[in-house]
Length: 216
Image 1 (spheres, rainbow, N blue to C red):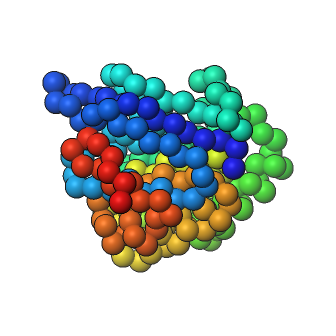
Image 2: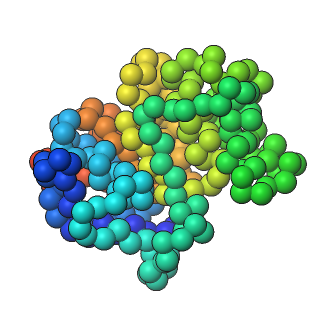
């Protein structure tokens, strides 16, 4: 693993309500980090700030490679990706949905097909590749989102409540996918309020309460 993430003294408020209070944590090893805690503890906010989707009010998010600080530019941002609970899909095939991220990065057609086929196989959707994405079930749509994230080969993958509002069968499939992802020497950061799920997935348990991190 080359890419590391360091969050230092992150604070964040919404409408005067302090959500994060000088929160710090370092993601410096490959594996699954599970941010867990009660609803309202700040875990999703912390995740979005770490994924550079939001700015903190104060504090710093730093990405390092082999111990060297990286510039926050598009090349660095393409080494990470975030999957939110609500997946937006294009009204086209499953294959084209997954291929989109590669096309905008300028990949060639033959390479795109190989990468997309591999990603769909990884999440168990190869048999759906020509189906309209908008016709997938909620669990299948979430797996499509994971394939779309994985196909661009991120070094750090952020998953915000990846099994929220999903049936038990697809929850089990997604948990198995997450466990297989970590074998590829990636950093996976997952939020969940389900402590049993956290214990099944976590290499590193990160417990949040009232905007602060309390490591077990």
